[in-house]
Length: 491
Image (cartoon, rainbow, N blue to C red; front, top):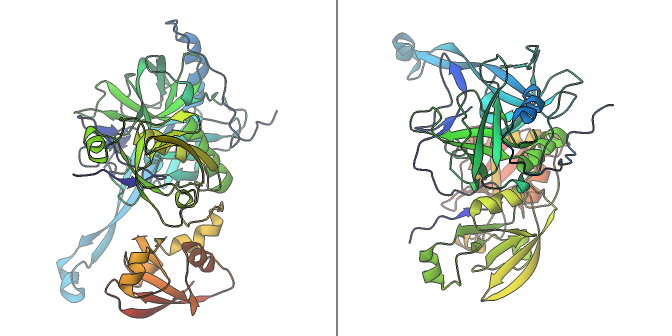
């Protein structure tokens, strides 16, 4: 039986809508957003990182004028300029210098989307794909004034980014709790796609906690969190990063994608829920990066096939298919075969619901799980850990040296240690452009010593690599074939 299993915390793949999925952003010259058939749509104020959700109530009166008037001034136009370099091959240079030799050329492009003002002092939320790889960003307000913007931070795993402009007294939008959103309620999509004025369309909420497998389809190295609010409000190119609001004019989501066969609106649009947006926004402003907590389990949705195979009672909950070593889940004695029914008071019936609930929390947070095990309902408390295996919150600055290495690490299982005939070490779980790749290291290689000190955990290794009292590092490594080697480099 083919199983759909992924680690919870940074994203789990789920069902795919039968139409092409598009992340809508307007581009010119060229587009670097295409993903096969998928493309992006694109008094002093209180600290924006402390979000107090506005009270909201469902108002079914079909008069959207008040909500529209209150929200359009909070939605902005975001314009980007992108410069891409490429090498134009030259047969003459290749003859002397080998394949790939040529002259460097630059290609210029532009893109646009929308954004939402979330604080009076200039913080703006948009989609990561709207500003990704941008060399210049400009924000135009609804009164047509334009400002240069800087990127405070971005999170590819949720497709959320935060910008900052130097302006005070801005009309910040009121943020509602997306947990209160009901299927069938009226909503408005507000965007500023053409750098004219904000536009408003209406629709209803069609579904919640939708996982459409679009965020991670381009970048396979991220683990996406997708738990979209699905609506039938018309959303077209340039609306990425715009506001999904309730009939009181309060933000309940950031418009991100549409499902379409043509790239134009065809009845399905998707928004990142405001409660998840608020957490990501707070982290980016306070720390410069997202503080993401992990349960430390591998899970899968419960199908009829799984019910028959595992003799489960019913289809409610999420099945625990694996528990990571030294994780919070292992410490809490979560077991393979457990079925997670609730996180706190929230019932869980899909991977998307679980990833959203965990995605709102930080390392060190404790979550209460309601679990069914062998027909018995039990309660467990799990302390979430970060990707390094501890509960620390880390600033962007503290990770600069570590990030320059271009790799992430994970603990070895007992079986892996036995197979390699080693007693300690951590392995490279992913590797991208950076110091370690330039030295010839690859995924799966195990680091056993740093400067002759034995490596026993991911936490110890990353703490050592972030130390500022050293200029060079000597790594003892073990290859996937079991061969021992040494690699030295400067920091």
